[in-house]
Length: 426
Ligand SMILES: Cc1ncc(COP(=O)(O)O)c(C=O)c1O
Image 1 (tube, rainbow, N blue to C red):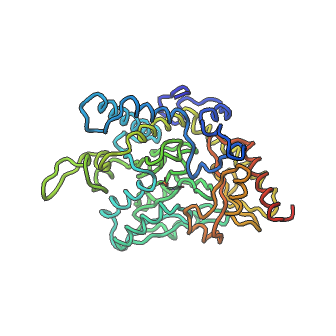
Image 2 (spheres, protein in one colour; image 1 turned 60 degrees about the horizontal axis):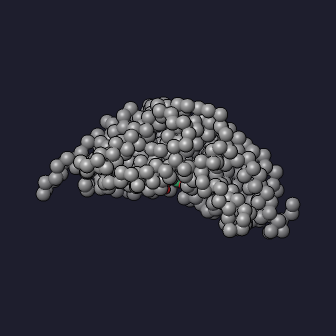
Image 3 (cartoon, rainbow, N blue to C red; image 1 turned 120 degrees about the vertical axis):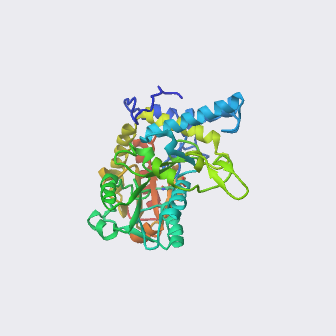
């Protein structure tokens, strides 16, 4: 990689001053110009983040220097692939504070990680009448898997309500966190409102009721410090492609005792100890949950992405994005008819979703694109949240470590251009 490599013993093993111009040079795609000749203003990192050169190089290194299938070859390339994969797993484990690498399962992403827990833990542990507690701001990836397993197990899905500014309403937590709650699964950061949720308080209250806690860290891992020991949570899910890593790969953290007690989710090669005609026995974790050939190159690339983020410093990334969100609030709230959804900047990460009276969110996104500003419009896989907001769709700008204050200005200018196109009063 092209920065000094910390040992990733902690998220910020080697914090240094944050220099966004230098960070941008790590991302070759950001130097591209669009067909219009404009520079790309990429404000869609919450959907998928761009990749630094070191991740591209790492994947290329694997493909050109030692590629082979994993966990099968006794020859030199196979052994090297295994070493690189285990180094990647260990890097992720240290980054999130897992006690051992075996507690980190490679999955295809946050969606698969949550489905794995819903199916493998839920099928064995949920009894009729049990409850799984989610929040109203969850991504569909943290709603639908629970609906599926709860329907099968005759359990119920419940939701923590929100305050009017889009935070979890903890005053009403005891109405929904009951003695029947077996698991609380919630996002650490909303992919629409940007809200950073109080995982520590919820974990403490859930544990007092005897419930497990699963954190959907798909949005929070790229934007700040994550430690599965503080507070001590049970499961954590995230996706590689949102944390500057490859697509098709992600991770599930699970506390060892829980993973050991769960049956496999998928069956196939590599996850077995022995196979007979009438039954099989399982490998130890993590192999028990990694049936078949995992995306080898991507899993190795993910380790490099995590090293890159750790070298930048998770606190430095968080502070940089906080500056951008504050600037976005200043610039955007001066625009007539524009409403930002969710809480104040100090309660959120690098996401700003908004509506503009008189311009449909999809028209807004298309007009912003004319100015080279890439944002997303729609329900962002949060239909229940949008029902609660009473908005069918919103426009969302989301920042990454490479986003700049100039890009916030470009966003504000482009929104003014969109309003003008619709002949709205200045
Ligand atoms: C909060 C949250 N959870 C889960 C997901 C699902 O991630 P993936 O599609 O990478 O599995 C997303 C994706 O946008 C998300 O924002």
